[in-house]
Image 1 (cartoon, rainbow over the protein chains, first blue to last red):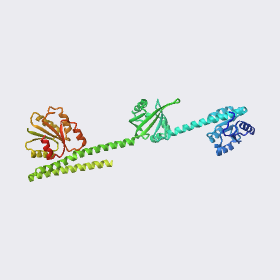
Image 2 (cartoon, rainbow over the protein chains, first blue to last red; image 1 turned 135 degrees about the vertical axis):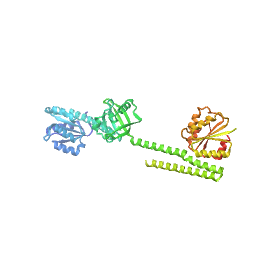
Image 3 (cartoon, each protein chain N blue to C red; image 1 turned 30 degrees about the horizontal axis):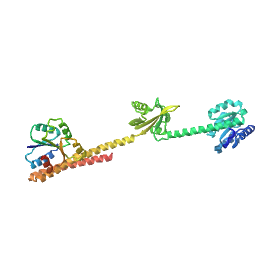
Length: 333
Length: 127
């Protein structure tokens, strides 16, 4: 604790010159590499913070300034100074307020009559350590919130017992048309059509994290139904146990597959027609030719064969026209 | 030995052509015409006690009872496996799957694509 060598920059907001000099002395005694900025009132402090708050590592704030005092002062300074720890300087008379200020974002408080170089040093260093941890946690939290919120797929956090929605990301709000507040009033089963909620409940308890192959129907706020694949994972942390649920809208895919299957059936029908139906009159015609070759008999016989050829030709033509129509039908779908 | 040919096919013109061709090649052959597998079954039932050689020309695609149905039902009939009964599939189908499927029937003697040429008919009658 003796030699704090890191560069430190302290903003002291204090209107009492005597108090300031005392604190300045203590700071210089305990910190080798310290810059001290002195602002005597709220106005100049805000002015300074607006210009160069990045320079400051910690703020020491007297609660009785000529232009602003107490809780309002604390709130205003916090509003101008997001990340740097604020330590309140107070007399015995304001002790209660100093204590309650801890709840609105102040890191610590020092009673002026009790300040010694060691206490001041310790308070500042602890505040700095704590603020570093808090910033780290805040950063991590933001990172995970972004991961959750900016996932392009609708994602929810559910209570694993009741399946109540605890959180819904932006994609979920956009896709389903429910606001976050509306989601928070709902259970996940509400997204399913009436009577189908039980099926999803069973899936969630089956622990088969990927509900594969099984499509589910979800109802949007507009009443429109979509077909979805549902993926989920249980989170079992000390502070909570929940389900992360992600949904993939496969309505379009399913529609395409159905269309393709209908077309495949039509194509199979056409192939079958080619093989069985088209060839029937054609083979008959060839058979008639075979017959003529075999026994080019009387004129009557030849005339009969030609009549049969005409019948088969007309039939063949009709079949081919039918196939062309069916093929056009596929293209237009 | 006398030969009886049984044409099982729903195409009347095709049957007429084959009848004429068979009669031209061998006028001693009796030719019976059946328009579907069901009447084909009845025809074979009638012929089972004759000592004639029976050549069946069986179409695949027919109403009422098709060629495959005929082959399946035959297995339960008293005339199944008679040595004098010879069955040929004759179809306008060139579908590979039909040819593959026909290999699964041991009571089939062969598979011909329509139209039958006079050489085909000679080969069939000489078996």
